[in-house]
Length: 363
Image (tube, rainbow, N blue to C red; front, side):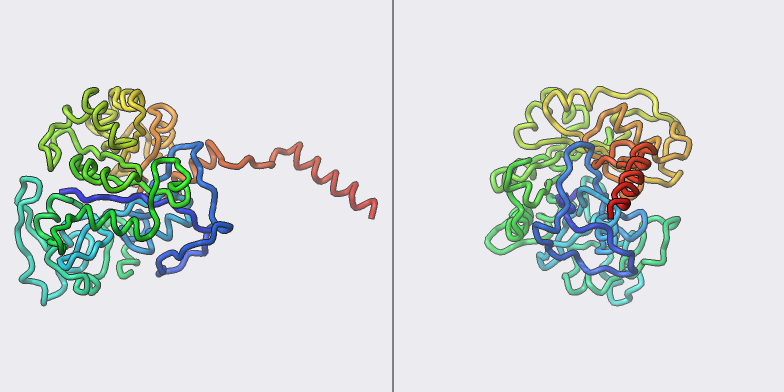
């Protein structure tokens, strides 16, 4: 089960001091926006900066802004009454406190999701007002739990009905257009408010193409998981012929990183040619997901996330990275490929000091 996903450009002001809870960001004036960078791979905040704060919360989004993300990835689902929400799973179990609410005990049910019987509390069985009663929590128990208060077009279209026979995709695009998101990739309109639309469902991306020219990314799952809507295998959707077909609708692909470089016993082994073949079709490649914790790092990187970033950016040559730790990626990029040159060499510093002294003598 997989939702539509939107990537929104972060154009807020410089870093704000951290605080325990955050309001949603307000619109900034043109004079207060940071310039849009295209000189290095995009730093994509995976559900916000969720390595520190619970995913898909205002706190996680705002932390990503503070830490220098280029885009925030927000997964879009729907409530029972058709309100779009930022949430990743179709069930509420792993990242909310729904199990603590006795009044919702009878909502636990089983649906078939992407061919698998899945049991839990589903977002589509709760109204927006009910969802607001729940608290968010960290998905992984080894992450900081102190802030615990703070996708799937096919499945949603089966469970939620909108007036006039509209589809989930229609509501999704209408919402983006309402807030001024439009324009093809790198066009003047797009650069005003850059955004990508992403989905694991190719039919949804093709359907949306008729409604908006916003750039789209085709997300690709593990080699064992077929597409939900077309039941195509990984090998079909990464073939040269399919990449040549899908490039008419998308500007890039977002594969799971372990399908780009094969893994055996937690060691990276052989790199495939998927990135090269995608680039040959003029498609960007935005792999997922990069995480700092040792649990997620391959042994090749010796428990060093910076080594992982260096490998994927400089050896594999990806165009964007989905990360749970936007600050770590930003720090690595600022060290390796700073956006602005730093006038900090010893000779330049001495020259400045000498100039200041000379200038003061004339006063």
